[in-house]
Amino acid sequence: MTEAWYELVKANAKLTQGDIIFNCPILTWKPEMPQLQATETEAEVLKGAVDAIQADVVVMSQACDLENGKVSNVILCPHLSLSAYRKDWEEAMRASGQNPTEKGWKRVCDDIRDGYMWNLAMLNSGVIKNEAIGEIVTEHRIVDFHDVYTIPRDFLESVLEQRLHPRLRLLPPYREHLSQAFARFFMRVGLPVGVSKAW
Image (cartoon, rainbow, N blue to C red; front, side, top):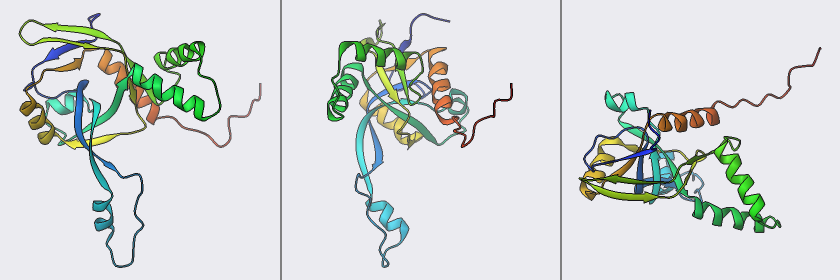
């Protein structure tokens, strides 16, 4: 095990779980979903409802599945810098009539770090150096599990090779920790009626 959260890998390194990709091309749904008309097929409507955007993402597909070629599409979740997340948080607080305070911000950060905000996970900051590749500095990142994307693996790997930029990769056990947080978010079960207390 290592204290370092990341390593720096070459652009042509095989894709694996925990790879951090900036400005990744992905498909997402347009905010205004068109309604199905009698003259259109469902497929036609869906084709017109897609946008191509770029987002900062982290690879969530299991390392063993990627290593053994068991998946042709890669699962991705978006992430953003802590400073960008703070701006969004402050705007949301003001929009709901609340005053964003330093104390409130610290509590939110603690809650994300400690796993109390189910849809979010925090990645550590770091300075990652590699004599052959260079250096990348990253601040804390917030991963959001509310949005999940998929992209063809072959396409993504070709994009990364074309860019010729090294990328960050989460190291064990930090990538497994992120995967566990992802799993906890999706395995939540809300019961309509809880267990009756008989003791």
